[in-house]
Each structure stands twice: as structure tokens, then as C-alpha cells.
Image (tube, rainbow, N blue to C red; front, top):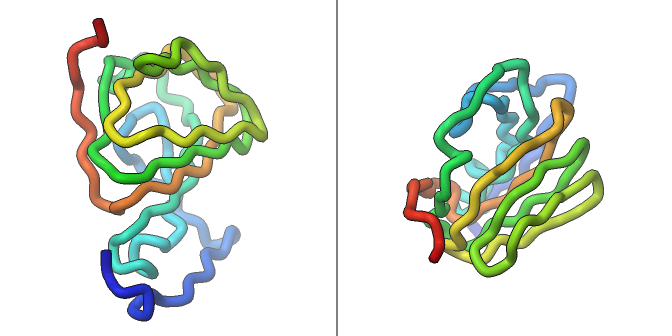
Length: 133
């Protein structure tokens, strides 16, 4: 991690938000500027379901190679399965702290599903893995 004295103040303005494709084709992503403000130590983005139908590879079991990942549900719901934790449905107002490298998969989500996700470091890999035994 960089020295926190090197971090910059960031104000992400909602009216200027840019929604872009990201890791998952069924979601759009709004970067909140935290990556730049923390020199890559963290990323914070809002992720929302788009109109794309079908599935993508992240419905497979996978892990995120990161040190911190927190999700706060802004709208809707989603059901995930976590290794050692079973199926969990997260709904508006819920938060999840995913421990590093926990195997998980998404089972389903509502059309209005939207979350705030904060991850460290900002650049991390997502790897498809074998299901837990």
C-alpha cells in the first residue's frame, strides 16, 4: 500500500456518472474515483444490473485475489453460495465482508440489483475455480 499521505481528495458527482462495462457483462459499473485517489490501494464502484440477458462466467465458482472486499446492497437482491457459508440472499441494506479468496458463485439476482463494492487492492484478478468439496 502507498503512504496515505499520497492519497487525494475525491468527489464523485452523481450527475456526471459514467456507467461502463466491467468484469460481468450483465452489469454496468460506475467507478467512484477511489482507485485514483488512493493510488490503486482501493477501488470503490457501484455495480448495477443491466438489460443483458443470459449468464456469464462468474456464475461459475470463482475467487477474487484481493485482500479486502466489502459489498453493500443499494437495491434489489441476489443469491450467492459461499464455500463454508452456504447460500445467502443479500437484500437492500445488507452488507457482506467476503474473506480473501473465498470460493463463491452467484445463483440469481433481481433486475434492479445494485451494490456498492469496495476492494483492495484496486487491481485484482478473478479466477474460476473448482467447486468446493
